[in-house]
Image 1 (cartoon, rainbow, N blue to C red):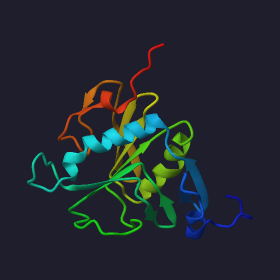
Image 2 (cartoon, rainbow, N blue to C red):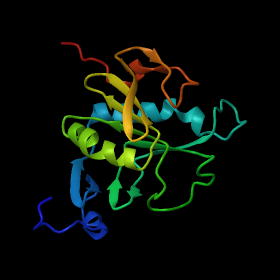
Image 3 (cartoon, rainbow, N blue to C red):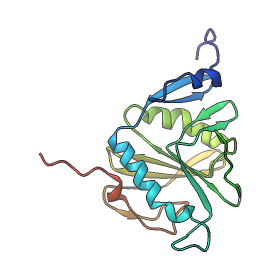
Image 4 (tube, rainbow, N blue to C red):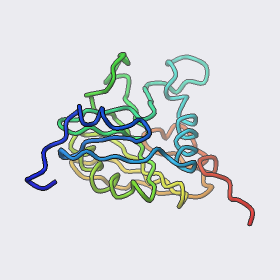
Length: 191
């Protein structure tokens, strides 16, 4: 943002059409298109795979202890971010309140990168997540068919694992469950 530009406000964000995802980072209003099918497929299946963590403790099939949401609006200081998925440990957020946005940083975020959002996710959003002490970050690339898992150590992201294609993996902070990455990707079309 140049000195002559004014800082974007929440009112600016609210004026963005619903067909776009709007965020404010470092005072700049940033819009992104709604996800294409590879992105939407990955987000949907990841959320479904992590469902056991979002069930009440002691319930059938529960690994419990988390609230996991699609595209929550996060107000983190002056920045407004919309990760593809985010999760809060219930020990830190015992009640999921009826609110339009969250001011408490999540414990885990998942960004599904695409050609139009990869730079934004890595260069602009990752430092905000680190500043706000988000413990874990997943970067999922449905075109490359990869999952990169990072853990925050101090103020730095450390990649703890990277897997791809059709592998089974246990990924922090949800290592109690083996994830079948092959389910996350669109099937390859016959040529």
